[in-house]
Image (spheres, rainbow over the protein chains, first blue to last red):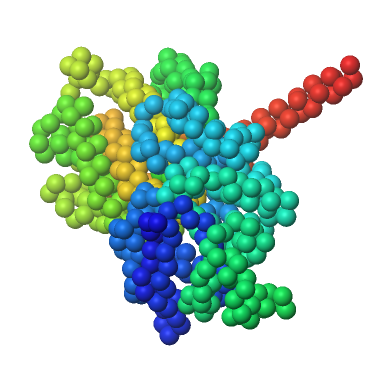
Length: 250
Length: 332
C-alpha cells in the first residue's frame, strides 16, 4: 500500500527537554490508524508537527511523497491534510452551515470573491447541506454553533475537516469531553468515513480506539514503543506495563 | 449579518440615511458644510468598520491613509496644478492603497497591542513628515488655495456648499454600495471567520496574512478617498488630518454608532459631529465635556453602540410580541 503520510527521524526538543525522538511513522492510503500513549508521551507535539503548528528540530515529514517539513499550516491543509482540534475550535457565533461553508469556500478558491452575494452560491450550500446530512446534523444548519450541545459541536468540528476533502484526516481526541451516548454517535460517523481518506486518531478512550483502528502506534516518552494491529498491541507486555497497566491502576 | 444564508436584499431602513441626507439638503441649507463633513466622516468610518468590525484588525492609525489622501489632493492642486476632482480622488485612492499594502505587509504580522502601537507609529511618522517637509506640504500652515474644477465640467463648487454636499453624497453612495456587496460576498464571510477564530482559518487552509493585507489595502483606499474629499470640500489641508487625534476621534465615532454593523459607521459620525457642532456653539469652552459624557453613557448603557442598543430593544420587542401571540394562540 502507498504511504500517504510519513515521518522520518522526526525530533523535537524544547531546550534540554526532548519531546519527540526519531519518530518514524507511516500512514497508508485509507488507513484507520490510532496513536495512543500515556499523558506527556508527546502525542500533541507530534500532531502539531504534522499539521505545521510546530517546526521539528530535525527529521522530515512527507505528504503523498512530497516533503512538507517547512510548509506552513494553511498550505498543508490545501495539500490535503485536514485536522480537528482536541478543544473544539469553531466559528462560534456563526451558523453551522457557515462554519462548513467557509471551509468549502477555501477549498474551492471562492473565499476571495467580493461581488456576488455568498447566499447565491447554491451549489456550495447544497454540498454543505449534504455533508451535514451525512453527519446527522442537518437540522442544526441554521443554528449558531455556540448554541449546540457539545457532542454536536464535535460533529461540526469533523464536518469542517471533511469539507476540505482531505487525503489525510487527523482527529485529535474527537470524543473528548463528550457524554458516552454522543461518543457512540461520533464513532458511528467515523466508521462511515470514506475509505479514500486515511485517518489518524489520537484518543484516550481505549474502547473507541480498539473498535475503530486497524493499526495502533504506541508513543511513550517521545518515542515509538511499538506498532501493530489492535490484537498485537493488546497482547504486548510492554504496552500493558507502561500504558494499559497504568490506566487500570490509575 | 453576512454569511451564506444571509438575506441580502436591501431593507427599507437601509434607504433611510440617503433619504435623511436628501431631506437635509433641501430643508437645512445653512448646515450643508456640516453635512458634507458628516458624509466624509461616514466614508472614513466605513473604511474603519471594514477592518475593525469585520476583520477584527485593531488600529489607532487609520488617519495615516485619510491624511495621505487629503495631502495627495492638496499637493496635486497647489503644486502640480491638477484640479480635476476625479483625478484627485483617483490619485488619493492610489496613494492610500499603496501605503496600505506596504505598511499592512509589515505590521499585519503582529497582533493586538503591538499592532495598535505600530499603526499609531505610522500615522505619527506621517504627521512629522508633513510637518517638516513644508516646501511640499506647507508644514504647520497647511496648504490653502486648493482648487477643484467643475465636476464633469458642469457643476462648480459653489459658496453655499450645495455641489460639495451632493458630490460627497454620490461618492459615499458608491462606496457604500461597494462595501455592502463586499460584506455579503464570500470575502465578507471569510473576514468574519478570521475575526471569529483565526486559528481555525489557518486550519481550513486560508492564507490569513494575505487576506488581512488585502482587506487592509481596500480599507486604506477608501480612507484615502475620504481624505481627498475633505481637502476638496474645505479647499484646504492641514496637519490635523494626521496623527493620533483624528484616528482616536474616528474610533470613538464608530464605537458610538456600533462596530461591525455597517450602519454604525453612519450613525456614529452623524451623532458625534452634530453633537460637537451644537456643543461647540453652546459651550465653546467645555464642549469636550459633553462629548465625553456622551461616550461614557454609551459605554455604560449601550455596549455595541447605538445600533447595539437598538438591536437589543428590537429583540426584546420581538420576543414579547411572540410571547403575546403564542399566549393568544393557547388561550384559543
